Length: 152
Image (cartoon, rainbow, N blue to C red; front, side, top):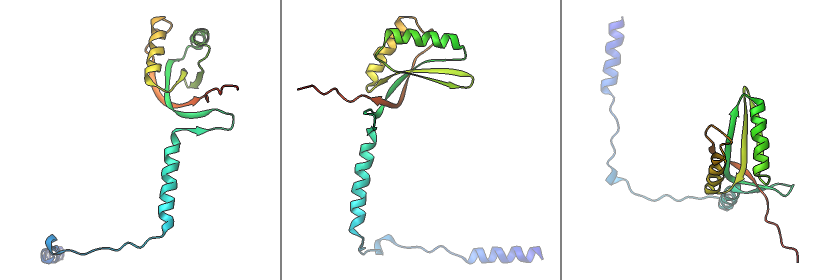
């Protein structure tokens, strides 16, 4: 019985052929009928996507794509706090971001729009021998302060 089923399957498969189409014989045109609102929606989506680089918050800060320095990732809390305090003394105008991801305390530093600025500050910190390990430049969404308007 198995032999008969097998022969029947082989015979059926052998008799099947793929349909062949000669590309040179296909010609014609296609007419697309669409709603105008699709174009309007596409333009709005493009405007929205181009605006994703900067989003304004209600507190006056905005965010943008930029860079931060990963200064410390350690499980030694007193060491992390010492580094954090010294960074505040050296760079009081830069923000620090401290997070705890078990078992490590991570300190990220700064809001840099340009990678060159981040690299310059990274070299300054490395030259002070404040941190003994590597400092990494991380691409992140950063906070950007709006430019101060001149008072008239």
